Length: 220
Image 1 (cartoon, rainbow, N blue to C red):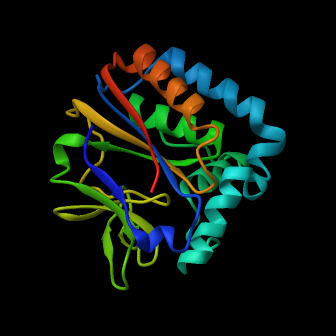
Image 2 (spheres, rainbow, N blue to C red):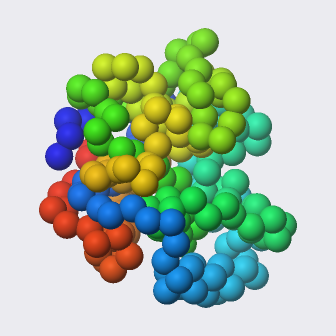
Image 3 (tube, rainbow, N blue to C red):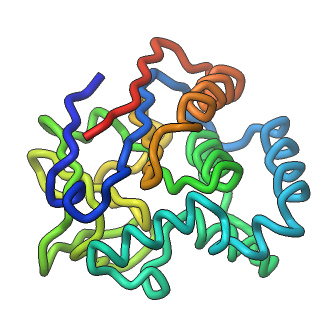
């Protein structure tokens, strides 16, 4: 497992932060028909409540409160779980990227945790999760340069690369990715994390031929 630490710059503002970590080797491919059907069934199951009232879901509420405590407006910078739920509720759909991204999105929508999945080969050195300083920015995936100041952001030796709102282009999963780090961003303790890590492992085994699993619940 890669070395990851949670900085006091986050824990001083947010008492119940935890990271759910999963590292494994995978096969990346464009489309999995069986998984696409599973994803659509989950969307149908959640449509009436969780998707249309995303900001009232427990883990999303906790993330919004954490953003406020860190100094970021959660209405301007929505966490990814809330943004995806809102997008689906408005019948705008999600982009099909690849099986790994789709599995990440499924888990995020199903759980309410914002998540990120990163290409380990593109991460350099140890990782620290900390509150980004004023002026911090990076090139987002499919987006312009993002202002990530005051968000809870992952940093490696090369700089910022991930947060619960939007991840960087640098560490994104592509068809060439062989090993991933999947992260559940949690702001309300670890009570349900083990269940979701096990579900993530099962989905990756079934739909990404994943092997060599390592999982960890990281407390401050």
